[in-house]
Image (cartoon, rainbow, N blue to C red; front, top):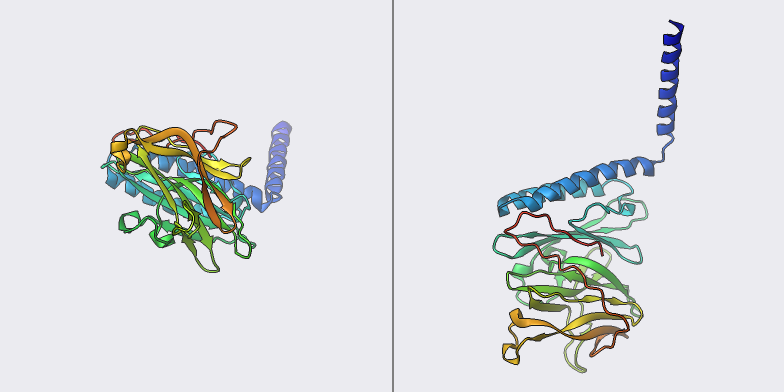
Length: 307
């Protein structure tokens, strides 16, 4: 009887110690545990979303995914949580730690893609500040036009490059995979700017030829079966990319027949412009970035890289 009583006391004491230890956990530690649970739920929902056979089911699961993601981001400390296990969407933080971009896509049955995303700002008080991104690609009459978060030229971003221009607020070059259709893929260099209450996409910065109108964004299009390098070369301080050209000169303007010709060009920030630099000699071969292509007719979850 004494042994049973002693065992009960030890169990009770251990439980009290455990509760005391839990009570002493920092809010960050408690939130970390909560965010890990959200991450697990998001991963499972994304898996269901990408394995769905039809558009209807994919978008239904995507709606659940968005609701769950917003709930997770409302958790205090979420900005400092990496979501590293969530492989099917891109989570990229700006180098100056000002914001994060969550971006992903849904492959549609017709071979096209619908993009989704949100920008989470770092706030001093830790409160949630989000800019939902609405893919307005289908309604854009000109891919060069300036847009807002509500008419976003959707993409899955993998790199953020701060652009510091004298006398102006820092803007950011976003590198992303755009997808397109069954014949061609696209990649994009997008410019993101913030003001006090909103954000904008696109900025007249890109100069290909001197004394010609500046472009607001750069869109590359090429054959679906080929890959394209688009990345920041930190050594040269250039946004480097493959020079795309048609297989045959007679196919000029038909992007289904475009691929890299094994040369490289780039954009360098000079003053307030991103000026084109052609025929760059790179010291090291550029790293190929995953094309992120998903065949909409297959049920496989996309295998993606964290950039």
